[in-house]
Image 1: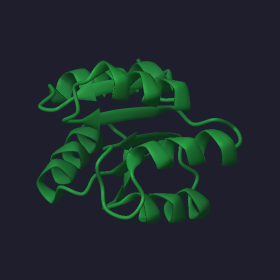
Image 2: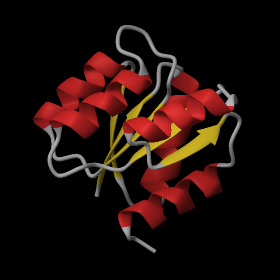
Image 3: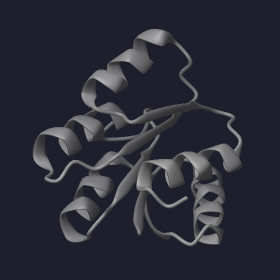
Length: 120
């Protein structure tokens, strides 16, 4: 299973990558939404994990792109430091499957990915 992780913080990106690879997933990395959209057009991606605040194209724009331009629909997990209910609701309206606030437990993130991917 291929997972795209869009995160502009290099340390967070690397930590997520290591956790997902240990769980048996193939990981594609993007430092911003523009890179994420490019990878989505080039690779078969089964699930996306994205931050909201990134340079160039924000995570909410990436979610909108996935849910309006991609078939079949791809599950999206949001990871962000934004804790307000308005942003969470907006992400869900755009099609986010799950929302985790930073800092988060990596085991919970991996369990969420497993649940969304059907890999239990």
